[in-house]
Amino acid sequence: MQSQPLDLAILGGAVFDGEKYIPAPCHVGIRDGVIVELGDAVSAAIGPDTEIVQAKGRLVHPGMNDSHVHPIEAGMEMLGCNLADGWNRDDYLATVREYVTTHADVEWIVGAGWQQAAFPGGAPLKEDLDAICDDRPIILSNRDHHSAWVNSEALRRCGIDASTPDPADGRIERDADGTPTGTLHEGARMLALSHAPQPTVDTMYEGFLVGQRKLVGYGITSWQDALIGQYGNHSPEFYTVYRTAEDRGELIGRVNGALWWERTQGTEQIAAFVERRAAVSGRRFRADTVKIMQDGVAENQTAAMLEPYLVPGGCAHRAPENAGISFVDPDRLRDYVVELDRQGFQVHFHALGDRGVRESLDAIEAARAANGDASTQMHTIAHIQIISPDDVPRFAALNADANMQPLWASYDPQMVDLTVPFLGDERVGHQYPFASLHRAGSHLSGGSDWPVTSADPWLGIHVAVNRQVPAEHPDFNPLVFLENERLPLDVALRAYTLGGIETNGRAHEVGRLAPGMVADVVVANRDPFQGEAADIHETAAARVYVDGTLVHTNDH
Image (spheres, rainbow, N blue to C red):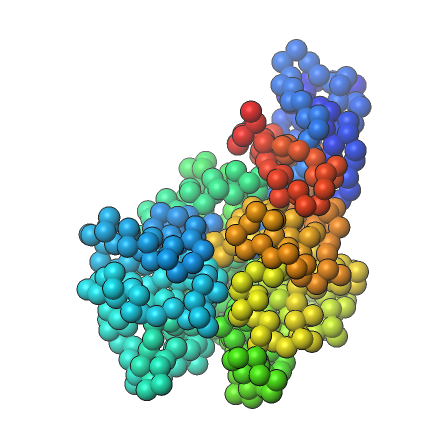
C-alpha cells in the first residue's frame, strides 16, 4: 500500500518493460513523474484524484529512443522545398515547380528528399531543373544527403565546370567530355552547399519545433541528434538551439548531441568539445558524443569496401579504381578515437561499407587497448550496411553498439537497382546482419536517420522483424531480404527503447518500466505481440508521457 495516492494509473494493458513482454493485465502506477508501482499493487494505490487510463488490448512501453536522427534538419526541410513525399521524377518536378512558383522571393532554392532509384544510374540531370528555373540556383539533396541534384545556374554560381577536379572526398557526375551533368556526390555536394545562404538560428529553431513535434507524436521521448556541426544544412548553432529550447522550457525530449568531427582537422578540435560538453553537463540536452563520418554510402559507391565495387552494369569483374572512400585516414582515426575515449567521449561512427566498419572497429579496439579499464564508453557504429562475417563477433567483444536503421534492410528500389548490382552475390548476403549480431551477443540500438527515412519507430521495427516493408508501402517488394537476419519483436523493441537509451548513457533514468524510473511512458493503440508480424506497422503511440506529464495524445 502506498502512503500517497497515485497521480496516474494505466490499467489493464500488456507491458513491455524495456527487456521483456508481460501479458495483460499489468498495471502501471505513476506519482510525481516517477513510476512507483508495476502490477497488481497499482489498484490499491488509486486515490480519488488519480487519473485513470484504460489500456486493455494495448501495449504500454517505455518512451521510444531514436539512436540516430536529425530532427532540426528534418524540420527545416519540412518547411522548405520538401521532396520527401514524392516517389518518382514526375513527383519531384511537380514539387519543385510549385515551390519555385510560390516562392518568387527566394534566391537560392535549397531542398531535399529525392530517391536516387527514381533516376537512371541514380543521377538526375540538370536539364530537368533548368526547364523549371534557369535564373536562380537550385540545390536539392537526396534522401540520404550524400548527393545533390543541381541546375546549371547552381553549377555556374558555385564555379563547377568541366575543369573542376573531383574533391578528394566526393565525385562530380559528368558526360563524355567532362561537363557536369547535374549530380554531385559527397564532398562535391558540400562544395555546392557552401555557396548557398546558411539558415538563420531562428529558422533552425522553427525547424526544431516542427521536428520535435513529429518525433514526440511517434512516441519518441529521447534521441541522439547525430550531427551538430558545419555539414550541409547542419550547423554548430544546433547546439544553441537545443540549449535555448531547454532554457525556454520547450525541449520535451532527452537529447544527446553528437558534435561533428571536422575531418580536415585533428585532435586540436577536442578542447572545444570538452568545453561544450561541460556547459551542458547534467541537462536534458547533453553533448557527450563526437560524430565521425568514416565513409559514404553504397548507392553512390562511396561506402568504403574491402574489395572494389563491381563495374556499373553488374559485370562480373571488379573495378579496381573504386573501393569507396575512407574520409579519415585509418591510422589517424585510431589515434583520434584513443584520445576521445581517454577524454570520456562516446564516438558515434558513420560506417556503411565493410572496410569502413572494420576501420571503426579497429579504432575502438585501439582505444580499449590503450586506455584499459578507463575505456568504458559504449562507442556506436551507425548504419552497418555491409559487415564482413569476421567482424560480426567483434562488436560484442569490444562492447560496441550496433546502431541499426532497419528501414534500409529491404528490397526497395534503391537496394535492387543501385546496390545489389554493384556488390555481387556474396556481399549482398553480408548486408544489415541484425540477427547475426544479436546471436553473437552484440548490443543493438535502433534509429531512423530521419529525414533520410521515416522516423516512425514501429515502421522500423516492422522491417527489422519482417525484412520487408508493409504490403501497402510504395516500395513494397514481395521478396524477403535475407530472411535469416530477422529479429524477434522483443529484441527489436528493446533496441528502440532501452537499447538506445543505454547507448546514450541514460539507462539509470529512463528506458525501463520499473519502480524508481522516470515516467517516460507510451500507451500504444494496440498490442503487436498479440497480432500478426505483418501488422506491426499498424502500431502507433496513442498517449505519450514525459516525466509523467501527457505531451501527446491521439487517443480517440
